[in-house]
Length: 322
Ligand code: GYE
Image 1 (cartoon, rainbow, N blue to C red):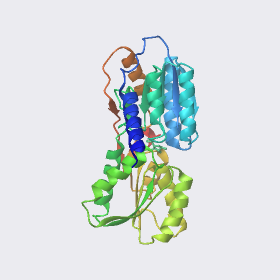
Image 2 (cartoon, rainbow, N blue to C red):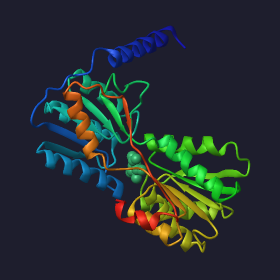
Image 3 (cartoon, protein in one colour):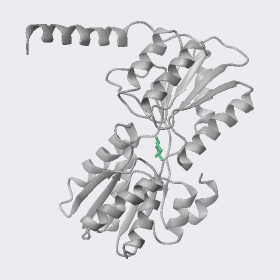
């Protein structure tokens, strides 16, 4: 490396660090109502719809003004959505970052602008922007553990023998990264369990179906599917049936989210199990904001409790699923 490059990258690293670590979190006054932003990443599956509804319902119940933006699956649009919330001087921001890295600098920008920001559902790059330091808190599920739980079920169900096709979530998103890792770390100690192919289906049913169409052609030996969300698992079921396979019989599927249609697929014997990922954030997110304004100590990570659904409880839990 040339000396200038070394110097430049050192300056850049120091700057990032200074920006990330400078100063306390912005304060929030106690008020009867607030004007807050909710910056959603996309609205293309039941999970997102349920999450948005839960935020809107709670804002309505409290009589707060909720400015809602939808990035339509574009990290760049989401950055400008947050920036426009900063420009509007809202009281606080709830951000559900589509991807980790591209959404990290804007979190630091909100802090510099004096606006408290809550990261909900997915997270940012926490080595650069830290919960409790650069943003108030992360509220969401433990995605690593969701991946681990899916693996644990699959290993048991297949008695330690499986050739797995993995359908990953949106590339660069924290649930895709952590669900991949939690699963991979767990299966490492089982020599009979192998991932034969892994590709992104972008968390959508249609892409899940298309990707599975191609992968099952290339890997007819597959005996299991691990999908990072239910929508992709449901798409995969369609693709597998078209290819003449029998989901639930000659191929075992496990996924994550716990939406109603997935529970119905479990009842129909096609999907094996799904780890819940609770999308109902409204009450918790708004309560955390109120606690923060009141000066209470907020834990940097507020982790949601997630249930687990399989043939033993799907029918009974159906009504409580989203
Ligand atoms: O699993 C998926 C959604 O970020 C946890 O995103 C969320 C995930 C969820 O699109 O269905």
